[in-house]
Picture (spheres, rainbow, N blue to C red):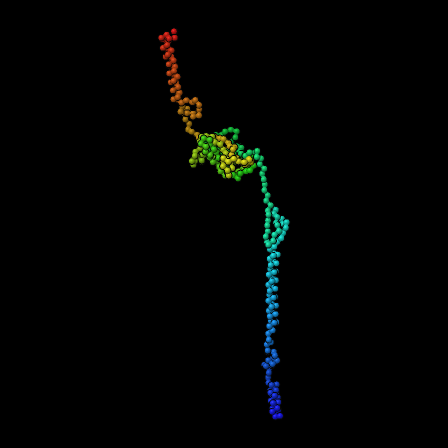
Length: 285
């Protein structure tokens, strides 16, 4: 019995000491508040998976929303949309195709009308005018039968004596009434081919073509020209020393003296023969 009582007393003593001991710092330990619970792997994995799914769904939603926004912004379908004379055909993916209506004007040309030309106003086309080389010559004309106007015209004068074409003006804009002034004195100062005392023909033709080109009906051609003359002035000479190169039958002093000598000799021969024959009685036989 004594060993049993000793054990009981020992437990009673330990119980009393344990009850009186200050367990304020260790109460939580024994109470279970300071002990960490075992991690629930299935719950943590489920939470992480739920978070990843939420992030994925949010990302997909953001991508879808952005794609829908871009598509709705960049995609435009329209039909029969008319603005400023042009028709817009409906397309997609921010693409528009416009077909503009082109208006063109056509000119009716009568093939039998022939090519166009000029009609001289100054000088008068009914007479031939002569100009002194060294002065200004003014030409004024109208266009006839020109349906298609050229962008510019050239004006030239062709000489019949040396077959040279002299430029009066180049690339002159075409107007209803054309005017060109030819300073022949200025030309003579720097001329490599001088002007001559001769007849000339004025031509007005398309600057994009040559003088020898044949124009179509309604276009400006070079078949119509105006003839005029030019000459050099010369110093005055006395009548006795003047020799006319264009006069027919005109004789110089030498020619006239020779003619007088021939006529005198002929008369002298006739008279001499008549006297000789009469003296010897030849006429009495």
